[in-house]
Picture (cartoon, rainbow, N blue to C red):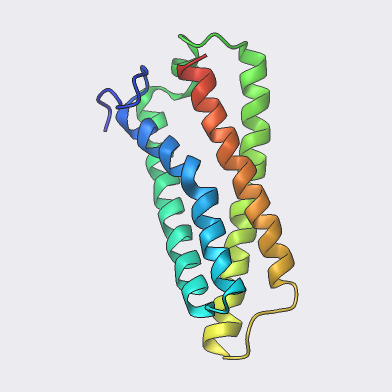
Length: 154
């Protein structure tokens, strides 16, 4: 997990894996959303649950790995980016990610409650909130990839 990564940078293996996951997450979410357009609601529901679960596992691996590795301060030692900029960027990134994941979990909870338990479909706001979650997770994913770039490539 902490051995050298495979992307040719000084990043550890786990950060390479996590960066790849978040680089493709928006495309996976888009594919899941496209099931709704095709009226494959069950496939949409299952794929969203799976993506959410995998994303939570990846975030836990990230958090544990970063803590064991010495935190952002340790990675900043070799970065060519001003500390104040990285901290500001991280605050914005974490805020967007946190809001998006909380909304995503609420959206899934509401879907499970109404779609599965009560068998009456999803709420009228489900699509609107879902678009907001997709946008937030996409921005957060791209920001995460940008952080990797700033810390290990730039």
